[in-house]
Length: 306
Image 1 (cartoon, rainbow, N blue to C red):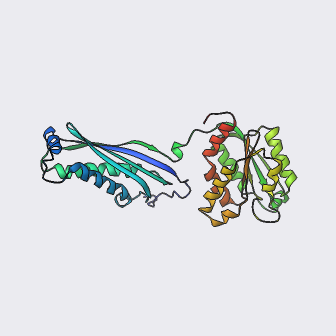
Image 2: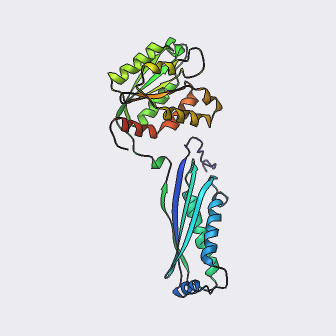
Image 3: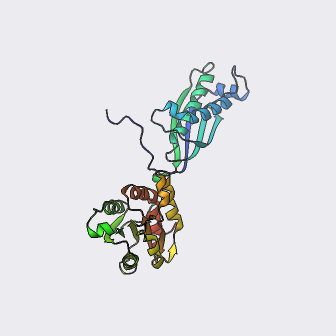
């Protein structure tokens, strides 16, 4: 039967999400006239339907089994009476890791069903003819198109990897992800935890190899040999503090020890350089925090438009 659990969205980034859906209920023209004259045996059906739609949006996870609970920041439902039909428009907003299209669709559907329930006593010809999603925004599918076919590089900073006493596990992860995110080539090197080899390699890649994006891994912690951030003093022309802050913020939400990372981000010429920690988990979190937005940054650094 396959996996019956809810989809794990913990690795997705929190972003602004919106959705708008509509439902159409066909009614008899006489019914529309009675609604306008307020001649119905029950309360105002348009108002009640709007309230029902709002309640439905907030309770979507109780109605649709695989829907995540989302803290909605805004729900608006409008029921508009027209000749021969009632148009319901539901708009929903949230800041979360998953979209709100199901909340909007549920709101529109329940509002239409509420109208049907309140009007069936006088109109036996009613039909709900459509429920559809009009638009949605937010999340990875809404991210801007990023750079493609750019040259990238991965620098592993580790005494033990260079000496051969520890196998490098983070380099292959970074190389694979960069290729999947649009890089056409990924250079690779490993250097010891020393300022000069780190900065010299980065300067060579940026100045002579014209690498667009460099990710370093290792040497960002609080240990006596963790000097990768200090090595950036001889490399960066400009800091990109927002990138480093995003990596730390994303990591802290998943592992409190991420606050101990001192990794930096910046630019040398048009080359973007980002320091990531040396553990597999921290690298995976960092990559999820960076992409696809970092691909867009590469496009901008190469002269592209926002």
